[in-house]
Image 1 (cartoon, rainbow over the protein chains, first blue to last red):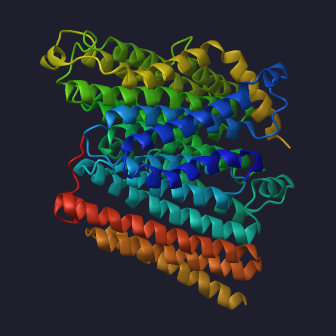
Image 2 (spheres, chains in turn red, brown):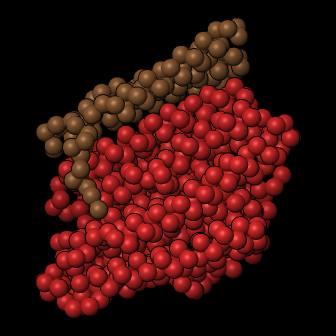
Length: 477
Length: 101
């Protein structure tokens, strides 16, 4: 564990323990407690990253790993949006706030544990804690679909955990340690270690299943679609990214240091990333359920991250980490908007929606911003991360992948424009006649996240210098 | 030492694949959970074997923590089983098909 970041894990955990006692009588207290905890954490991490002294030094005074810090910021941002949203959304839905908010905070704590851990074993433990908390969250409205999604998630995640445990056993045998730094030194010293490569590939297999990359993506659409609406934003926005993709990117950082053996593994990673981009985008084209479409789009965007991680040049890592951040922002907006739509119009079925921009202008506009960012339209943040990834691919000579990534980016724009037209534009449907805009409390998280998307796009030079200073330059020994 | 090590890994692999087969072949959620358990016992055995081989004190801490995690995971699985039984009236995983697209 990085000791200076331990507070981000312990404080939510402590509030999670406190809430069931405090809020037994009054459910409102649970909401206030959770929101205040997350807001305080967000302000704290925001100040750590963006205080004038840090900005003036060009981020070189940050001693901690830049990847961890940025992920902590993302976790708190998404956590705050989701908990603020569910405070107004959950009324009258039979969700017990005295259990829901502690679980939310436990998963925030577990995610902070994942991103601040400095060895594979700690990382694995927190991933398991996160998984158990997220099953409970998925089923928190006790719906039939939620239980089904959770079971599918469970039945694929835990065999993957078994693969990770096996990988840890082989790693214990071949390296004698789990620490990232020691393994980096062992790898860098040039000792060709087939057993170590084998253990890393077992870990990679497990984490690829957990991140929902094709061909292991079967659980993602079901879990996202079935989950309680604010929870699906939480899952798609951050949980599966931290429990799977984060570790994949971490492991990919080692693969690059190997002399020969692990190169094939990187190539497999790139191939799987490309396949996910393609399959996710094509499957998203023909979905009728909004949440399911967004889930496939999520599979496709994860593909970009995995593709860049597999390429494993410093520029590609900058692109991967930046895309991870961007994915969290725009996917949270889109899922929260789908929840708002469901609340206002009573359905997520795109064939029955239409002309929703007239009653719901704010939802429509935030959705346009998020969708353009996903599709990579300048000057929004998604454009820059995709651009970096494609330039990195081109630079490394993977021209085919670069061209394909560009083409499928256009396909992303296509399916999102289809979605936007079917739901928000066009003639007023019967659902749009009766619907009205949701309350400001439900709009605030989406508006905040859209502001972050625009700001991250416009202030891209700062982001790039942050990532270059804290990740790319410190990656090489 | 070497002989017992090979035996341990042989049984670890055997348990792993028995568990995997049990998960793949059965339709009952409870049986799948049992298969999952068998599978993770196999991996625990592998961990114990490599801990004994490498003679690190780290291994003991790892194995004890793993056992605790497994208990939590099984508890989560059983609650899902109960919830599935209450909402669907059965535990057949092939009948879980209300989510489609």
